[in-house]
Structure formats: structure tokens, C-alpha cells
Length: 121
Length: 121
Image 1 (cartoon, rainbow over the protein chains, first blue to last red):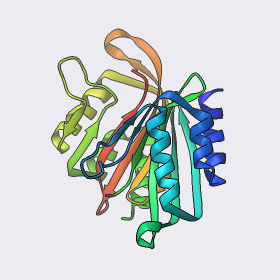
Image 2 (cartoon, rainbow over the protein chains, first blue to last red; image 1 turned 90 degrees about the vertical axis):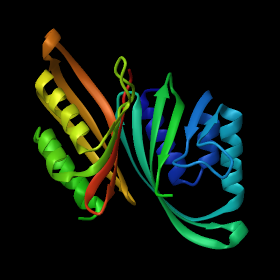
Image 3 (cartoon, each protein chain N blue to C red; image 1 turned 180 degrees about the vertical axis):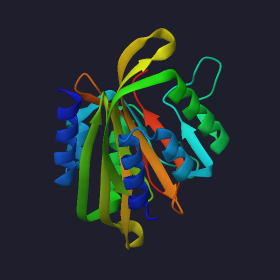
């Protein structure tokens, strides 16, 4: 798949709420995932498919998604950008909020090898 | 200006080749600019308007822009993404090439306070 095809597939899956399926089908074993900030005592960076699957699993378990607006992709070379606007409830605190973020991805050989998220902390 | 207005203005100026004017009119005194990689002996990060003006000046002096394709912006919260596809000649080596990159910006109080570029090294 070209970068454009990887990007289109990722946007389609995320717009359908299939975040976990996007990770399972599109991510490289060597994925590096970078958050805007580190959790307490943790790192901004998750390395490897198992670590990113665990992060995705934690997120899915702890959030109820009421609606997902996904825009993009904008593709340039091996990279592409997508925006997410998610209306979610963080279940442990029953706290509903809107997440707005820019995500940048790098594709290599048909797989996502890097992702980074930009949002206010 | 809202993030959307800053983003639209930046895209308009860059599409017209007015990269330097974008820096002069839209960038905060406290701008932080991050390249995908560091130059030999240098840093990925430029801090402050003077440093970013100097980088912009160097770039403008050393490149002839044959065409500039700017797409976006995609806006989410305080951040936005833009793609650049530039057909340029690096004048010191008379070397013509295409630059393709994703740029992510953060706006605060109507000014660009952070930018980061994603491209293959």
C-alpha cells in the first residue's frame, strides 16, 4: 500500500470507531507511538506493537466514545496528518469531555511505523 | 485570531510563497521550531523569533522556489496541520529536488508558538 492508501484506510477505520482494528491491521511490529505528554511516572513514548496494543486496549476499556469526527488525511511523502474530535466519557470518573488532537503518522512499506499526537495538556 | 484564522492566514501566505512574511506577522516572540533532524553539529530545535527568522532567512537565501503546493489546514483545538510540496533548487549546489513534508503548528492567543516538521531525512 502507498502512504495515501494506508492513510485512507486508517481514517476510514477510525471514523467507524475501529481504533483497535486500525492498530491490528495497519501497525508495524516496530511502531513507535508518541503522546503529547507523559503519564505520571511514565514515558511519552511507547515502542513496539505489544506496547501500543496495550495502550489502545487501556484507552478503549476506559473510554466510552459518543461520537468521533475524523478529518483528513493530508499526505506528504511518507507522512500524513489526521485530526480527531472525540466526544468521550472517561469511565473511571464518569467524566465527559471533548478531545481534539492532530495526529501525524509515518508509513513505511504499507505499515504505520510512527505516530505522534498533538493536543493541549 | 482563532486557531482556524491563524491557520488560514499561514496557508494563504505560504501558498503565495510569502514564507518570511508568515514568520514576521504570525509568529510569537517565544516560537519554538523543530526540524525532523539536526544539521551537523546543530540542534533540531530553534528557540525564539530571532533564531527562527535567521533559519527562514537562510532557507530563503539558499533556495529558489519553482512551485509551492500547500494543502490544509486541518485544525483541532490549538493545533493545526499543513502539508507542503515544494519544487526547489538548493542554490549552493544547483540541485533541484522536491520537498514533501507535514507541518504541525500550535497557536496561542493569535500567534504561532510551536511548529514541527515531518519529512524523510
